[in-house]
Length: 79
Image (cartoon, rainbow, N blue to C red):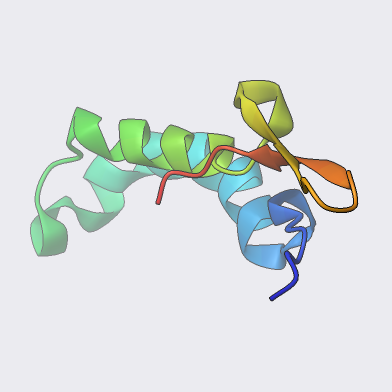
């Protein structure tokens, strides 16, 4: 099985979350509180963890094949 490199920043969902998460936090109480309850601080922690997931700047492991010496960087995942 060959590793398929992910690029989470290139997905439309990632860009949507990154571009609008703070706006959602500011409007959520006025717009959604009656249906979903108040905005919990934990929600922003989860969003920031999602945005950091798979980012090489947040940490990685160097993976190397002992047979052919091929190596690559594997970003840490929140999974």
